[in-house]
Image 1 (cartoon, rainbow, N blue to C red):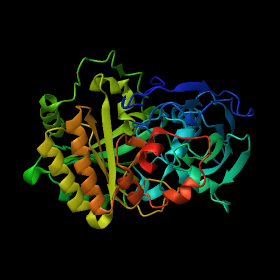
Image 2 (image 1 turned 45 degrees about the horizontal axis):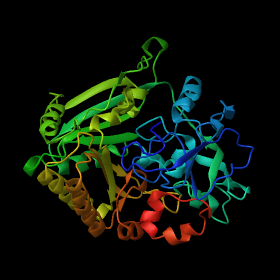
Image 3 (image 1 turned 180 degrees about the vertical axis):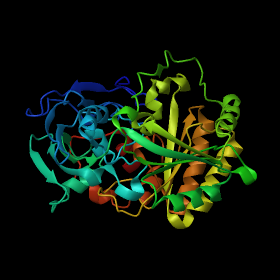
Image 4 (image 1 turned 60 degrees about the vertical axis):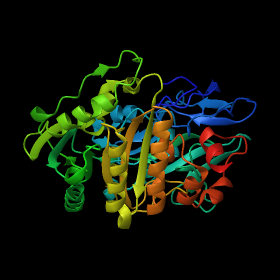
Length: 435
């Protein structure tokens, strides 16, 4: 876990206290000022930070309570990570119905950010598969919140609620059946943004998982070129079971400057684009490297140097997606500051369950930018204007600097949500976008 004063993006860095939780049956410990639940520290911006206040570190709530291998219903504490769920459930034929790009997030964090995955067009967001949870408030009260019985709205407020409604102590999840650990996948190299939308449309019904890496610095007729990957869970005989990856590499230290810069990005992106000579490539793989490629590099956030990085993820509505994504890529290409972690995918039409949930119909683009100071902040402001004009939204879990105006426009139910906030809970993000 990063230090108590920073998130996974290592920006911003703040002064705050840290108190650990270990027993879900006990009330919250005494604290002065404001508090905020904190899981495994994988949020990127300041939604998981509480400058001048206290973080309630919930990773110690790491116990499994019950698991039914006949139905796939799992009851566990909120500090359990998705990795630990996979270790328990996959050998018994079950997997997460929705998973983000890292398995090192806690159940509580996945609920608080209503995370999404490569199969949103089929299965929606994480919150759709949460059956129930317990919510512990600072006054000692406990609420049993159920998805199918939420007359007062506490379930909808807490899913995607950024940890502000209280501490989720435990949750009941519905896992999904899988035949094993194998994935059947296909990688298709495409040469332009319109080709991405064609591939995405043609793959939505035929494949459960769809996602694209794009070269965010390519311009002109090559703008938006990349690799489109589509995949499904695959049955296999015992002798064909794929081998799980080992611990992988580690970034041993923080370099004095970002290894991701204008001198390394263009050659890397060009080499990555052409790494696959054939346009189509079919392959089988273990599900861990498929879903979590960056988990194979421990402490990969160090490569951005001591100043850290800012991740930018937005979603643009269907009617504005093609022109909006093109405008975003043009702005990024002109700036010369880009990302080799540029991910493009389409969300489905299933409404998200949370009042502040990010995932909604449209196309989402996610990139990492090294923190180069004022230049990158001005670039991100320009990207915000494109998103605002298109009627899109920026993802709070990955934001460290969007304006209150942008947030309040994109999340019009924020005032309704504010009524559910625990009066002693707060975050740097919430104060920034509402005060």
